Length: 381
Image (cartoon, rainbow, N blue to C red; front, side, top):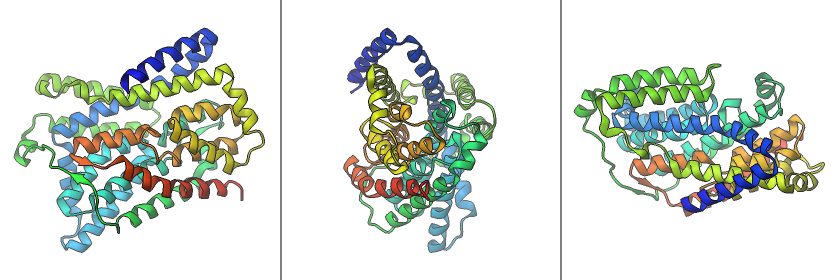
């Protein structure tokens, strides 16, 4: 798949530059900050995980939970859902996927929570609850940069109703799956012993770096700059104290390559006449139709290229919101529909948890129609 994605990227880039160099530069200008952010966060999170940061965080979370077993599990489960929502809303769905997945799995293992339910709760909330703020989802940032909204405040004002409805659906789905029997393959991944984690020379600096990074991501500082600076700090610290941590697999190269290929192909197709075709198909379409089309396109391609391909067909705030509902809440069926899903699955594998893609697809086929249709209908009231 990597070779196919690479060839597709090269061919599409050549076609795009040959037909419309300005469009190619615009595309790359919009995508570079996105992938810089994901790359930086992946480096930070994966180094932090290896030095025991998530073990330290889970111990703190468990410390405040009740001692009695039933109340403890309920409190930890509710806490994980709440944290997932807050991180998704303020720090983006990709941050939730790569930051909270190992944390949630660690908490679930230590306290007897349903691993399958916890894993799905994280990925569903990451995707479906990503409408609230522009920074919640990178497609929201694309809509803002493309002129879909006059300002961040304009976006928040317009999106709060469908965003709240979508988040409620995600939470309800998480509660339902928590009542189902656990059917996943889980192995015990290698984790340092607690004494080694506490003694690791990078533990304290990593905690400080993450502690400074999270509020920075919610500030006016460019999100890609914050994650890139944090990644450089972590790499320098590792180079000085733990060179064994510096490996190429810290960055999810296959996921980034696949998303780049699909985005480039989508834009090339749009320049070659796809934009006119999309405009003709969705001319005077209802928000429900636009949202459904966006969800289907996201699951066939990926949510970022789906947004780029369908963006020429929308021009109003309502149209942009409908498209965002489709490409944000809908891509929970195919593995490649959302970069966050690929990052989530990568973190599961690193934690020794194997969820079959057919299980993910089956649940997605049930949940996606509800997650797309109900918020879209709210735009028509």
